[in-house]
Length: 174
Ligand SMILES: C[S@@+](CC[C@H](N)C(=O)[O-])C[C@H]1O[C@@H](n2cnc3c(N)ncnc32)[C@H](O)[C@@H]1O
Image (tube, rainbow, N blue to C red; front, side, top):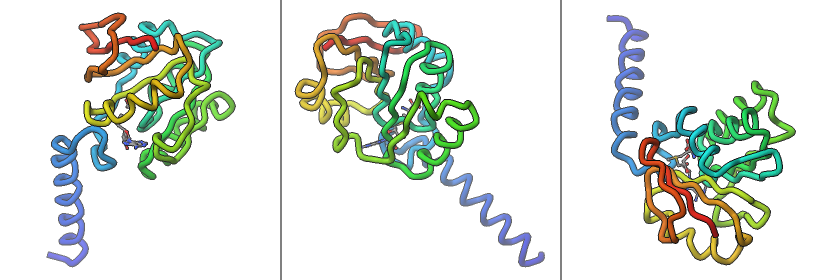
């Protein structure tokens, strides 16, 4: 077997291993590449929060930016994504440009704990309970009264306003 073929097989095996591992890494880990919100769920999140053109939607841990792209393109909102992982930041930047949304959505490559989020009117989160609990004091300190928070999959320790069971999303109002 040629040297090139052995290298190719090694690369494929490593990629397969990473994909397999990504299912067991927690979703807020920078390594968990495949935990993401699909377009259907993103639309349901926007509907649940009644997102409109006057909203500023923050996605804390914005991944590939799908939820913000839907919020901006289909619901007219402005968006701010905060993503710590360089690969996902890079992918979301490309997707933003290919959707011509650079003037409506901004992605920051930062830790969301270090970003002031007071101007948000809507917050999207898809994070594990431990990460959500760590964010609670920030929510209580920085968010304006009436800010809507939509959490995909995991509960937040706040009074629940609405629960869309079909899409597994919950709405909270600060
Ligand atoms: C489960 S994914 C969700 C991605 C996206 N919100 C979605 O729904 O498709 C969680 C994301 O949070 C990011 N993340 C985790 N901790 C973070 C932090 N402290 N600051 C910024 N991003 C973070 C991860 O890199 C990952 O992209």
